[in-house]
Image (cartoon, rainbow over all chains, first blue to last red; front, side, top):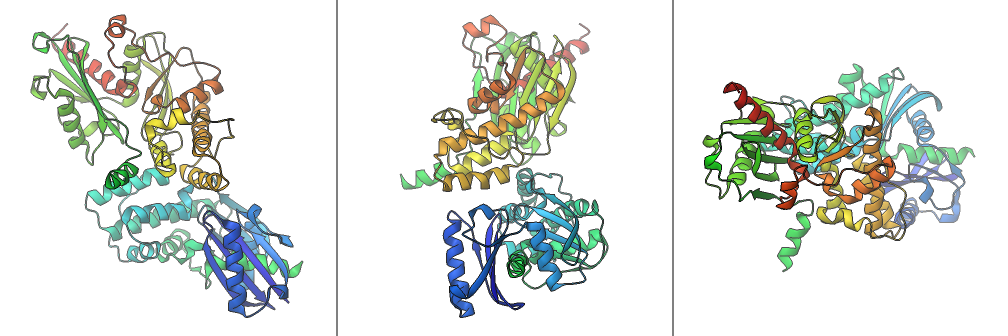
Amino acid sequence: MISAGIDIGGKDVKVLLLKDGKVLAKEKAPGGFDQAGVIEELMEKALKAAGIERKEIRKIGVTGSGKKYAPSHDVEITEVGAAAKGVSFLVPSARTIIDSGAEDSRGIKCEGAVVKDFATNDKCAAGAGAFTEAMARALEVSLEEFGKIALKSTKTVPINAQCAVFAESEVVSLINSKVAKEDIARSVNDALAERVVAMVKRIGVEKDVVVVGGLAKNPAYVDGLKNGFKTDVLVPENPEFVGALGAALAARES
Amino acid sequence: MATNKTEDKKELWRWVESRWTNPDIDWKKGEIISAGIDVGSVSTQCVVMVDGELYCYSNLRSGSGSADSSWRGANFALEGTGMKVDDWHSCVGTGYGRVNVPMSKKAITEIACHGRGANWMYGPQVKTILDMGGQDCKVIHVDEKGKVTNFAMNDKCAAGAGRGMEVFADFVGVNINEVGDRSFNINEEPKPVSSTCVIFAKSEAAGLLREGWPVNKVLAAYTSATAHRVWELMERVGVLPELGITGGIAKNRGVVERLEKELGKKFQPKKWNNPEYEKKDIPFDTQIAGALGAALFAKALVEKERGK
């Protein structure tokens, strides 16, 4: 049976096709100004990559903060539920999930796909991907580079501002006072990780800890989480597609 | 023309820098020349008083360092006056960069200075001052002499601060000076956008523009969110009449009038307590309150020194 998962995030839209527990295709693109159009395009691309026809898709599941923009579907699942389903499928031993997206971050305590507790911040960009994006922009490096160069840092500087808007001004003044880009990037990632760690600690942290969402692709952020939790954290392959995977799994079960 | 346009686009957040001199005062005859410099995170002001009368002031954007901003503010204020910083008998620094004002004798918190300055500008009837700064928003209770009795502050989040407004204006491509007027050029008052995070308000605005909302309506939704955010802070400390407003956003009627509606109260009109000043049409700049308060404190320092 083939099912599709659509994850409409704060920034990117993800589409994933699943057949009997195997990922056939996955596509993503920024939602931009026409999310419905982007979803349609991604679906076409995914179908082509998988070499199947649209009518072969039996069920469609949707998740993400932009669920309301979704085309017709069979199942709707919360972001928390989708992350738990997706992670438990990939890493059955997971007990704590950190889901760090563009506009929200979540800590989820789970057993298998069953959610025991969760904490979330979707009110403020301070703990989300949008924070690193703003800082990368100020440093004039790509998001990918932003995580990489941070690993070359030799020392950290305190970032006092919590607010992404204020932190951007702070980063600009650090640049002006000739602090190395690498050190600024490291400090920003540490500050971000610290905030997420504090939030997740509220619900308690149990091993294994798994990080998913777009930010999981940033090695410096993941490193910051490791230091904060004082335990190893696991990052599955393609962590940004875990929500879409969860939605596809939910669709399959329906 | 084409280059001009791109430059304009880049500078949408840029508000007008200004300076003013009182032509009726001969500073050389003054007994006490006192100055206040308010180095904020976004803007810097310098106010010079001669025997307790407003002589000149400047209002400009803060640079990369507080010392540099102080000098730029002082030089801009003194432009064309023939006065030099050495002629000052005393200077007080205030604001975020107050400890790095090289020409100051003392640093005093911006809360005390805003209380004192707003009291002088608006008059003793003002008991609650809302100061909407670049990176913070303060609600200050003062007595009839301008002495602070209580305050509340948000300096953690850009929602409700001037910098947030700059970022938003830039994002929707509207000159910051036009935001207030344009936010009323709408058919129907929309619901506010997210009042908690400027970054999220921006992506919400992108969604609204995508849905076909006119830019002015989006401005209305943002200014009303800002007003609501500030209202929450005011409610926390309480609102004692009369109300005075200072800072940069005080110039944005989109926020101020919506806030008045939520409060069910009006702010005092932006008029000098001193009728002479009104008669002479001295420009009432809400951004100079902190520096003005600092200049008043500087004057008091000189008087104390001279044993008056």
